[in-house]
Image 1: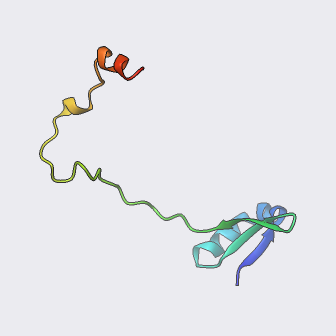
Image 2: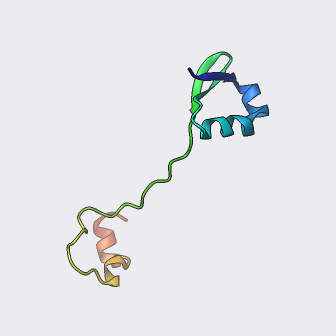
Length: 77
């Protein structure tokens, strides 16, 4: 069952609540008795590779160079 705490209590006991969330406790923070957020551990995201680039050969550094002024104007930039 989730532990529900009001905003004021959450501000004064934040470190303890974070520790509890890290070990799997579900913490709900309420504003005037109405649940508004859930405190959960941060999950580090894996680095993503562009799908269309995967296995498609070599890319030289010029691929990442800024576009020429003429091309930028065509795009309205």
